[in-house]
Length: 424
Image (cartoon, rainbow, N blue to C red; front, top):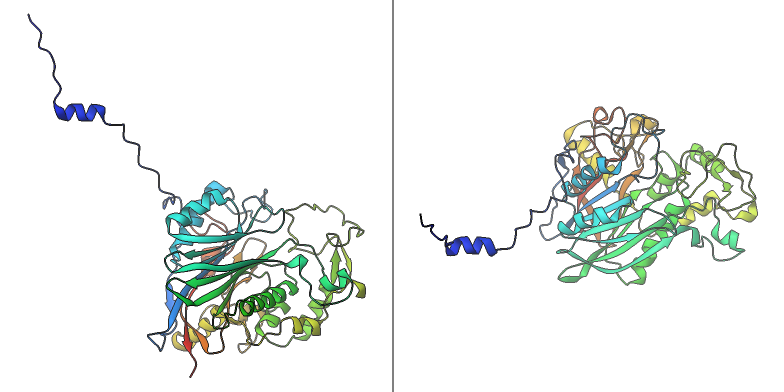
């Protein structure tokens, strides 16, 4: 029997010769792994001028994966490893739909930056010397571009113009913390923009005062006095503490004066002759925010600021305003009682800070309000809070963060929509 010769068709030849198609790339954000508790946007008020310009700002301390190797601080967490949390972090960052994102305790840039770039964000990252984590400001590239940026190393900044080096610096701790300050110019209109600063501060208020001074100084040095300033991040003090009062412009209470007096110490990181506290574990990633150890009482020669000097350090022509404190005050006037931190902290309702969220940091051992979005208005504009991202209720946060399906950090993200309008 004769056999027929097989002749492939042109279509079969084309399929044979075509290169093997690559498998579609996996999505950078896995929404199944990244499930979080959804949060609504709350309308505070409408802007009065249709021509005014607005921006959506988000801030979040995303928690350093390597910072806590054990379960000491997070005994109930089920997602301490980076791989367990990263998609939750990505989902929450992007779901804010922010124009400007301020992130703290950022590492693993090789994972985060592709996610931001795919979402059309540019970024500026800054970290202290030899630190494995830092802060990051991201911005929509179709709306903003970098006009300039500086990094403020708090340990290296003089707090007074004369005296010995120790007196000029007035250091209590050497923290290696920095302020990441970026001037963002609006695309298509170089006359408009923002000075944006993000940071993770040491709890003593002097670093907040330095940041405030340097932000205003940077804006004026660029000749951009018409641009609003945005200060967002983890300030490491709650609204009842001296740092908040100084930043908001309230007089210090007697209790706050007493806290400041107890905090005037010099750590071994500044004075190596200080004896170490028994059982201490000092290394580059140790957390000085929990207790004061390995320190001595400050002497006059150490140059730590007195309370009047601190007040002077925080003195700026226009006082910063907290957008959540103001926004939640307005919400209560229109919508009735809201959850806020003031009642728990014993703050009178009229005092600034009483209407900050109930919590912005929630672990088994440590529950507080530490994160804020502040603005400094230009002389002819005033910020109007139009929307707020609703804070978590306590039931969502129990028994402590981070937790799968809830939040990938021990901090709660904050986001607000704000509009600047001309003064009457």
